[in-house]
Amino acid sequence: MNLYLRMLWLMLRSKSRGRLGVWDTARTPFRVAPTDLDVLRHMNNGKYLTLMDLGRVDLMVRSGFAKKVSAAGWYPVVAAQTISYRRSLKLWQRFELYSRVLGVDEKSTYLEQTFCVGETVYAKAVVRARFLKKSGGTVSQEELEELIGGVPESVRLPDWVRDWSENASVRSTAQV
Image (cartoon, rainbow, N blue to C red; front, side, top):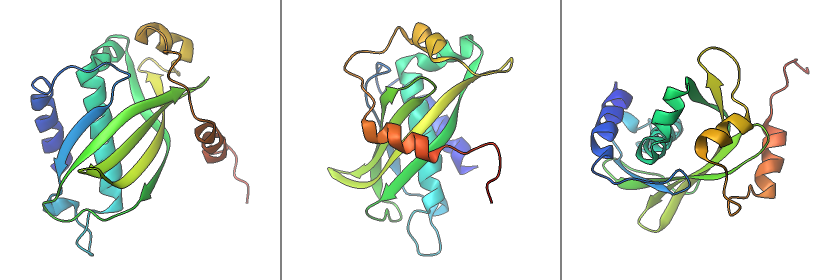
């Protein structure tokens, strides 16, 4: 329920928060709610991943990309993600989630998402995302780039992210 309320609040506020380009960084403000806490009274590690969904939605909605994707009959999915935690977020603490596209490869789009209080980084994540078609199948990078208008030369996927992506892939058969 908490996620739906936050999503509604995010959608209502998105118009007043200004337009972004898809290559810009979305800065999404949050506050740690009681429902975000674990037994140690800091934000549960799973909540970070949930809020990252909202950060990506914020970027897509404010850039107008969400409408384009929906009109094309596509939807985004997370294929892999990794997160490192530096500090704990506590009850009622305000923080911002910065979300930006890191780059693309032949199959996926990569985002960096950073949780900050002021200038201090509390956690940082990398997400590998794909787009699927509601009619079935995967959206090719060519189709995605056509919809988005191409990828700027300045957007280059770091080598370490490419290496991580290869190592994070799940094989279709079990290797016991």
